[in-house]
Amino acid sequence: MKNVSIDTITQAFLDYCGDDTDPRTMFVLQKMVEHMHAFAKETELTHAEWARGLKFLTDAGKITDDERNEFVLISDVTGMSSLVDMIGSQHGGTSSSVLGPFHSVGAPLLPVGGDLKKDNDGTTVVIEGHVRDIDGNPVEGAVIELWQTAENGLYYSQDGGQDDFNLCCSMKTGPDGRYAMTTVKPAPYKVPDDGPVGELFRATGRTPWRPSHLHFIVQADGLKSLVTEVFANGDPYLDKDAVFGVRSDLIMDYVETSDLDALPDDLEVGRDVTLPYYKVDFDFTLVSEPN
Ligand code: BEZ
Ligand code: FE
Image (cartoon, rainbow, N blue to C red; front, side, top):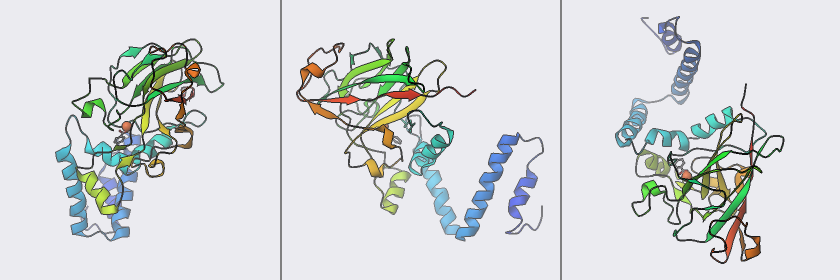
């Protein structure tokens, strides 16, 4: 098409696309280009501003490798990851939250009551709860994966001083749907801010911090898999999570106690916990798989 104008360029783009384009692809592409063109018109975008935006993406490409994906981080810190997550999630179950970049496949399977703390520094946390379906029935054989930072705020994959799969495990719930483990309290964590995302944070006065959290994936036959995070009540960053992952039902109390009689009796460590220790109770509710 010749002589496109500000008013016709969006339609001109659409006219270039073939009739046999997959309908969903076409719809998503159409909406994306419509919004991009509207954005440029609304902001009266200058060449210099658009070039700055392209440099941001180019820099993201340069810093991205097999270990680090700046584009995923851009999606996280602009709220896109959380938005897509919320659009796709069903109501009624435990809220989902961002996966983040530090999930490792293949964490060791521990029995219910297993110990993750081992010789990690920090106060013992005893976390236990049940996996249930939306009707409240216990889910036997649900597979729970947990991963978290150590007390220094680093995941094992970021820290040569930690063993592989340190503070990561999977666990299968028993007939009563119960899980339990001992671990340590994770520390608040700063998303990587040494790349373009860091520049974005500094340019906009934002904090790169995330409140301390435990990551979970919970999967069971016939139920929708849940990717979520559990946060600590009172954490200073709950209201300014850099990646918008906090939901009220995911905030839990770390209850400090020295009551050894309150320990579950199936802990691998028995009564060998720090005193005081923290007790955390958190139940997961899984919704049915959509038909
Ligand atoms: C995290 O939970 O560790 C994380 C999540 C999103 C972006 C970066 C880090
Ligand atoms: Fe995390």
